[in-house]
Image 1 (cartoon, rainbow, N blue to C red):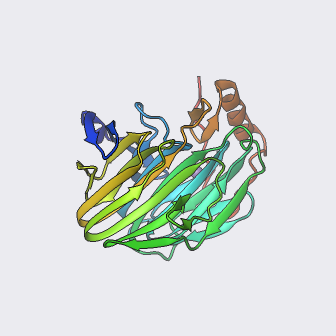
Image 2: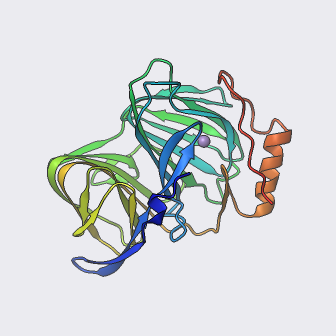
Image 3: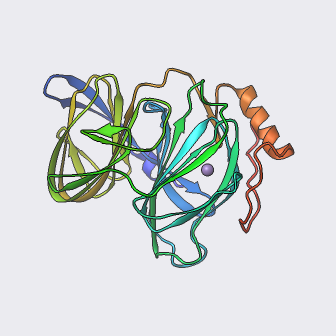
Length: 309
Ligand code: MN
């Protein structure tokens, strides 16, 4: 794991806004390894901001050249207590899970896997594929009432889009203006993908009870006047009623938000739990039982959990 990006100092910045003056916190991503050799920018969790609403994990993978070798390969591994949300930007990945779903994910599409009490899955580049891979992967923590539910998988081939001021806004989760995402989540959340084709200025309504974070995947943006670049997450906190996003070049931006998650979670490896005993039990179930089912069709071994001491 490289520490290049984590060496950057965290900067505090003050952002003036129409009705409220709230401080914003610029959080640098860490570089992390996904599966067999795919370098990703990990924007959440961050030691200064573990979650944004129920969003508890945010990876930006690529753009990466996957024309050589076998591309992205993440062998069978378990999850509990969360939903995995995969947003494909360029290229393809093939999802397989222990419910026997096999789903190719293509640009503009979402795979949503609800782990609940337990599921296992693999993700890989298909044999026949585009040369460039880019995706954003999120985890959404499940609230107490849902975290032991039966696992489920859903593929969303199409999401609502809004065209405005040289930008295309895709409503990934939640609602913007009159457009509502079909993606089923269990906490009040927002997820937007914003692609601008150059010079653009967008003023979007925010909910004061939500906290928000914004990241640039490619290009750059000025958010309430503050410049942000790839590898940074600008945490905006609560009590805002609007956000001004401006770009001067072709850019892709992710805005996430939600009501602050009311429960204390413990994240370890691929599990979202509430305490160490729960994590230890999930590791035991993965290593010693068939609780998480079997992923058929992946050419490789299941991944073992690192030991939790
Ligand atoms: Mn996974």
